[in-house]
Each structure stands twice: as C-alpha cells, then as structure tokens.
Length: 408
Image (cartoon, rainbow, N blue to C red; front, side, top):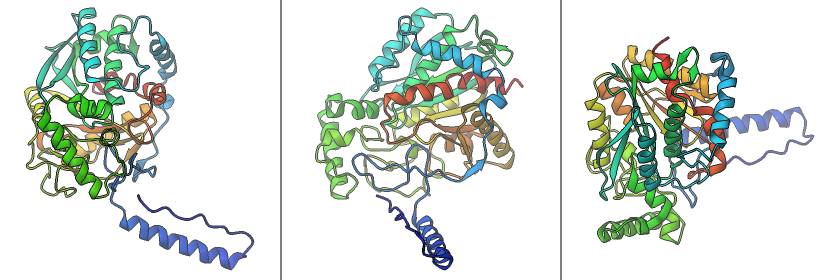
C-alpha cells in the first residue's frame, strides 16, 4: 500500500514551530510525490493491490476547473428530471439497474430484447470472440448509413462492470425517448438519423465473468488451472493477500489469460513497463495486439469510415483523460471535446499524459481519432450499486451530447 502522511498536531507550539513543521511537511510531500507512480486510467496508483486493492483517492494533475453542467447546458435540469424518472420506472424497463453484478448473459439478453422492442433503430452483432469463446457484441444504434459515427467501449477492465450497465441503460434511454426527446434544440430522432453509435458494452466478457463468478464462470480446465497458477504467483509476489482464489478474482482486471487488455494495444506498447508475466492487472501481454479481444476492437474501429470520437467508459475517479501525446491539432480538438464532457458531467479535466498502450492511446496515436477516457464513480472497484444513481445522473445523455457537440 502507498504510504500515508501522519497527522501533525500543531497545538500551541508557537510560530517558529509551525514554520518548521510546515517546511518539513512540504519536504515529505515532495519526496512522496517523486516516489509514486502516476495514476493511470481505469485504476488507482500503480501499486501492488491488497484485498481489496487500494485505489488512490488523490486526483491527478487537473487541466482546468470544469464549469458546472448548468452553465454549459441550460436545459440540463429539466432533462435530468426526466432521466431520473426513467431510471426508477422498473416496470417498463428492459435493463435492470438494481443489481450490482450486471452480467455478460444479462447484457446479451437485454440486447436481444431491446432489438425486438426497437427493431428499426437498434441491431447488434459479434465483432469477435474472447479467449474463452464468448461473443464480443457491438450494439448499432441509429442509422447504419449515417455519415458519422460515435464509437463507445465499456467493460474492458473486468472489475469495472458498472460501465456496461451504464452503456446499456444509455442505449435504452435514447431509444425510449427517440420520438419525444429533445436536447439543446436537437431532437433525438434527428441525431440518430445523422449519427450511428457503435457501442461495445462488454469488451472483456471473460474478465467480467471471472470478477463476478470466479472460476465457476469457466468451463475450460486449462484456463482455470492457468488462473490458479497466476493467483499463486501474485500471492507470492505480494500482489494480493487474499487466501481464497475466488475472492482474489473479484478484483481481477485482465482477460482469461491474465493480460490487461487496456495495456495490450500497439501504441507505445514497447515503452510501457509494468508486470512481466500474466497477472490480475498491468501485464501488457507477450506482444502488442496479442489478445483476441484487443483485435476485435481494432477491427471494428478500422471498419468504420468516419468516426467523430471514441469514448472509453471506465471506473473510477470522476475524471476525463484526453492527453495521449497526439499531434498539436488533434490535441486541441480532443481537449475541446473532453472539456465539453467535463462541463456536462462535472468531472475533472486531466492534463496528465498517459501512454500505457491503451485503446484510447491506439485510437489517438495510430488512427488520429479524438479519443477520451471517462472515469465514472469513486472508490474501490468493483463499485457498489448505490453509486449508479449518481453515475447515471452525470452521464445519462453523454453519448447524445457527444454527437451534438459536432453539430454546434
């Protein structure tokens, strides 16, 4: 665990003692900051986790003070009230937001039900298979022949499985208000005619099922034995203190063979240096793009012809990362887009550059796309379901606004 600063009791020691202690505190903070590894998207400080892993509560370097949502979107309050009613209307809902462990199977069933309910505006298909053979689905929302696309990835880190729930509820919300919804003068129907949203709710199906159900989620003995071996190595290395393998898997981030998919992309992959073997987190894989889940996202991205932006949904921190070291022009465009998101959500805009072979890095550095990482929620992942109401309030219309941004 990362060290913490002791509480300093000043009492009545006088001005000299206060100045001395202040100087000492500043020196300790400077030494502490220089020894810490930077915060990366999707998890806290890069330190060996305990059980549960400790995630940093200290925000990374903030870009600017984000405006309040009301100042950016004056009509936001009225729309927000409608969204809150929608969330509590469980009788007519397809996507159940009351369960923390929203599973891969529930996601697949909900996609099927939503397509039956809204056949003219939603379809889905497989973009590939995971290590364990699960289909990786993309939901196609809107007009498939639309001239512009918005691409969304969620659930790439196993223990961040509130993001698939958010993505699926966003899909249902847009469909439910398709004929009547209006946001900042743009009808939902007009946006879904001009834009097609390609949403991958669960980019890491095996990992999410491992985090939720443990070894029982796998039928392949070889994969199960491999995970047990990884567990023993992580335990011996002090990466976990959990004596039970299924409890350890609750905090799993990787895919079924211990590769962190969001460190596996061919975007400065060689420079990213973390764990050198399969593990619960931070192993980048034997080669860039080595994992079938990684290649599925790449193939989808390369198939689309006019992507306006890529939004990667993660947990936790309530921040938005945008700086991948892009070209100057793309950097300015990406920062402006990210500023819109922080203005809507109230999250913090982060200036810190992260080059860790992530999907957003690959989109920005290899495909010259606007790509941002939106970190929802706060606390230790897996986040509790009682956070979902706030996450929903902050993000329910985020995808619509991403499209509207390019219309204004």
